[in-house]
Image (cartoon, rainbow, N blue to C red; front, side, top):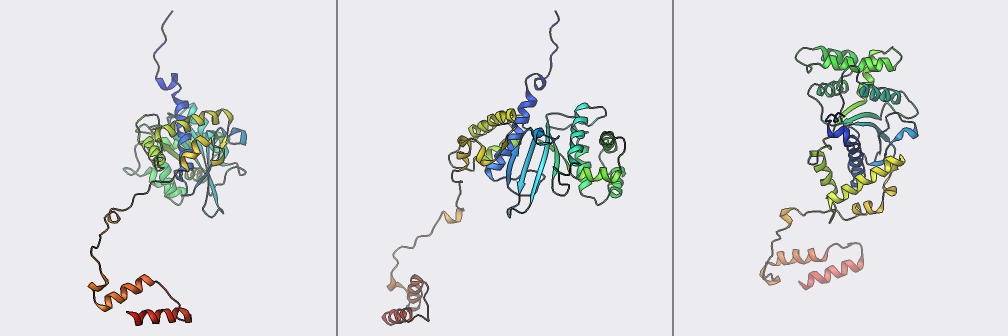
Length: 317
């Protein structure tokens, strides 16, 4: 009997599922701590849903809902979470992600093309796949397909393999759209599609440090302990395809975010000058008068009682 071939720990040890839970949990932390979701308006997060297929979403790993401070506007992010992905031809994972995104993008009942976005959240990208981020950013920073296409084809302006990556995405979406895809429609899709990199597959990554910092705003909180509780909560949420709001999360977690925030006074306020041996007899009459008026505060000149009291006070100085 031949021994099994060695495989990476991500595929054999459930690393992909662990990464997904951590990403989902990071948005719960943002919701509870008053943070904002990336690539979206700086509005409070009102709800985090997972496994949204039951609600009609094809991009269903994570749905983040936000609402403006006035309550008059809403926006949401639909996210697919993949620990690793390659933007190459015939990649089944990429085809599934883009197919789901295309279906949701064209679903008018669930997706608002003016406010909502679709994102692919992944771990570290390969050097060549960073060209995809460049393509998406320049789709958003241009005003037309023609302008965007000029940038992509401009030598020494676009990153290497940009045209190749764009062709991969176009061909997949064309297939999703029954073999026909207009360039301008493709361009509009790119403007609402985001590629977000997270290093949450590492125990000491930058994102985890920022998460701990968000939690530690609250007095007396064990940031690592609270983070662990939220990740565990996401395991149950995924099993039950739950939608999480502040009032549906375990009290054991939300009470940690009900504590007072730690506020540090500026250094200049920590050193108050003390005046010793002050006496009303040590200054001029004008200084003494101004000091005493400052202690009195305000008065109403049209009020006879106030006027009488001030007059008596002045005569007594």
